[in-house]
Image (cartoon, rainbow, N blue to C red):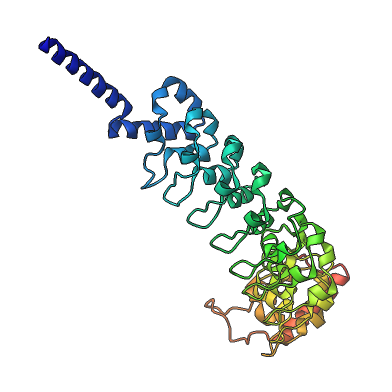
Length: 394
């Protein structure tokens, strides 16, 4: 009887140890399972792997490497493969509390790639949608940047959640304006006051919309004088930002009135100066690219043509703007636009002939043409153009 009892106890112990081994795979086995799940998720064949190797889908595998890098569950959420996981693994403690090296949860990853629709609605509660990562961004921030705010439940789109700021001080309004999808925010939350909230750099959502060329996507009722006249830390209004980015063509014509075009920043520049200084004067709408605006000087006496010349833009401007009066205006240093423009970069019709060379191939001692001589050449060339006999511009 004693021997039989010992044998029975040994068999029970062996069964327990064998079961424990199956429940807790060795580290090498877990690493192999992790790599297989990552590869299947990236190739969007996680469902096939689940059918062929159901034992791979266990909690300890999905949370592996959480403390050192990105767990497989985050990769699955990023690739939009959460629907292929067993329902028993789609739990709150995994989707809402499991963090990677950037303190992001699988909710953040799913929202960042536009896959929140694969997460059960019972897990998308306001409290969990307010959880932040290392950059202070919530899943709602991530959904806004991914143009998928329509996947966030209505309970998660509240005034508080939309005004919460990330590490740059940007709200959901800033990010939605940046990607041109303010229309995904409920109308009762999309107020003029929300358009005036600055980020840490002083820019409001309209600055971000202007930076991306999306001012034409902003509802007209939000383009208030207060929001459009706010200046960021550079002293720029949203129109200045659009000019610096070459996005003035995307600005609604109602905003490009005489007052807005003539408004100056702290350097005395108008939006045409800003566009010219960044090499985008030729992208300016023709309606405001008038001789009057082109001849406006800044504090140093420089017109937009001076700055356009320095950026090699004269060849890209309409010839009707390159008049004798415009090209003869001098700044406070006595320089005309042609003095800012290197001779080699001038259009052919504005260049002087090359200097004659001596027998040895070296330039002769001929003085460089003065600004007055260059202006005379320009005047002669423009006169020839008016008669229809002038050479074509490069």
